[in-house]
View 1 (cartoon, rainbow, N blue to C red):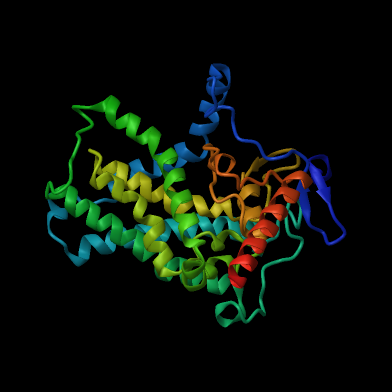
View 2 (cartoon, rainbow, N blue to C red):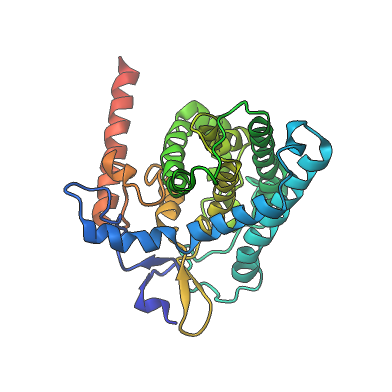
Length: 335
């Protein structure tokens, strides 16, 4: 598979997709029902269906009963932590092993022609991968597990509204379908908030050290950012839900950053086959800092004027925003 058929490569070896970024024509007015019908299969598969399947398996076989979860105990909390840890290691590790250790496709479809840093003082021990692993596994998975354990405990004790699948299957199915969309809104709000200068300098800067991200960069965050990022699951403390919803929500939050930070536009699986990572928008965010705060189907960046579609025109608009902001700050400084 020739990457030149799908994009261009500059003198530095950086690759850029030929097609500009576009949102699906779903959340527009007037409604385009044909576009919505075309979008539904892409929305469901492969990732949302995959994350939901993992959540169902976790709920059926690797989650304590509600009777057990009524009381905090090291045993069942350790079970949740270990299965979350194993899932992250296998899922993130698979991307990293194929793309960065084995380098199965070299730099084919790789946005940044350079490999991950191994001698950069900005990272713990100077190594980007080691740094990312420490923050992902040492902070990300524990925070994920804490939210999950508390949520299960609250469901088990009827402190939050519980809805049975047997009694309300359609309602519960609808909640499952809406979780990824709610995730996008929550992520956008939190992401804009942590780009506020005081929070950026003290919290979010750690994640943005990964200008050239790899799979493990996805969950490499400051613990405060992990608390904010995984807090989306708190919606199930308010909206009547089932424990499966909270597990699915957290699995989605925990795994989606891996594909979103691969640094590759496509993962090649054979001579003529590959799957899209759909991470170009977020790669541009890491590269340019103040664009593409959202990630997915909802055109939040387009609505709020921070969308970068990869074209020169979008880059010019972004630079104009930078210049306008700098001018405002200069005027304020003289007042």
